[in-house]
Image (tube, rainbow, N blue to C red; front, side):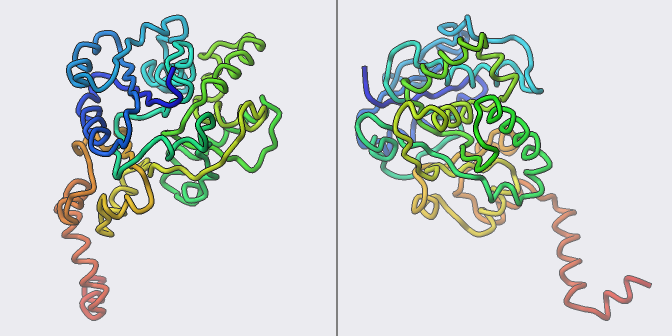
Length: 308
C-alpha cells in the first residue's frame, strides 16, 4: 500500500474538469503519485478512457452500503455520496494517506508528496478560521450562517469548545488511520455516514474536528495550499486585478473555482483578459450604466441636471 495518493471524486458532467485536472497533474507531478478516480458506475468507461493509464478508476458501487438516494440539508444524493466516499475511501486499503481532490482543481506549479506530508507517515492538517469569508456579506448570506450552525452542532457532538473553529472546505489530505478511527466512533454511536451528514454535511470538518479531539496522529497545521473561489464575485475580483496562474503559483500549489457557479460560464481559468473576464459576468447594459454613473460622479453639474 502506498503512503500517499490522490482520490479524485468526479462524475460524468464534470469529465471536462477531470480532464483538465489530469493534464495539470501530468504537467506538474514530480513523482509517480497514484491517482484513484471514483465515479458512478455508468461513468467508469468514459473516465477509464480519459485516465489512459494515468490512474485507476473505481466505481461508486464499492461503497454501496453507505450511499444514499435522498437529499440531505438540500444537497442532492450525488453531492452527499461524494462526501461519504471521501470518508470511507480507506476501506479499500489502497493508500495510507490521500488528497481528496475536486474535479475543478488545477495544479499550478511543480508539486510532490512533500507539499502534502509533514513526514513519510503524517499528512499536514490543512485548516484555517475562514475570517476572510466571515466578513464577505455575499458568502455569509449564501453559505456562512448555515455552515457555522452545522459546524457548531458537530463541535457540541464531539465535546469541543465553540472556538476557535479551525477547518477547511476541500483539497485536504485524509489519513486512513483517522478516517478509520472516525468510522469506529460513528459505529459506537450507532450512526451511519448518512446520519453524520444529517448532523453536519461537511466531511472535511468531520475529519478535522475528530483529529482535533482525539489526536489519532500528530496534528501538524498548515494553511490550505489550494485557493478556493466559492462564488463568482471572488473570481471576478481576481480577474479584475489581472491575477494570472503565475501569480497564484507564488502562493498556492493549485486553485479550485467552484463549478456550482462557474459551469454557466464555461471551464474558467485565470488566463482571460480583463475585458473577457468581465464579459462572463457583466452584461452590456450594466457596463453602460456603470460608465454613465462614473461620468456623473466626475461631472457634478451634469449630475444635477439628471436629478431635475
